[in-house]
Image (cartoon, rainbow, N blue to C red; front, side, top):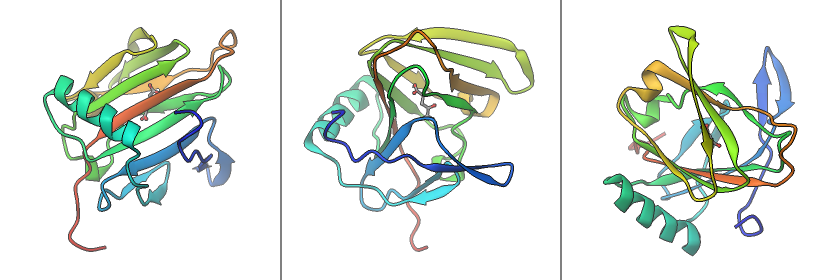
Length: 168
Ligand SMILES: O=C(O)CCC(=O)C(=O)O
């Protein structure tokens, strides 16, 4: 999968300055599943057979359907994903997001939005599936911190359903 997805390094706008995101990303999905993340609009690439097969298995496990997936590639422990919630309007108010981990184990931390001292941490192992649903995006932020001792890559696939708008 590392070799077959069309990875790109998005540019983020932080405090008015453009900086390269500390990871690579790729957006795949149904043709109408356009999505705005990292401050930019994204047209989906067409599902690859492997991504479509994983989508179907993850959808069965999650008991729902998905029309898109954001793939993240952390090349090693220097790559990361800062504190955020997946709360873009096109995901709706209580989205179900299924997050599949492949490759190097990485720490995954949550903190409450109204009390940053209230944290929960888990280790995402190769093949693990995390379901975020209900009020998890409304009440919590999550992060993949940098880890100096991680030297192997990790791919994360977050399956999502984005609302399809009639026109743009
Ligand atoms: O890599 C992960 O497990 C988390 C990815 C993530 O937070 C996201 O795609 O919004």
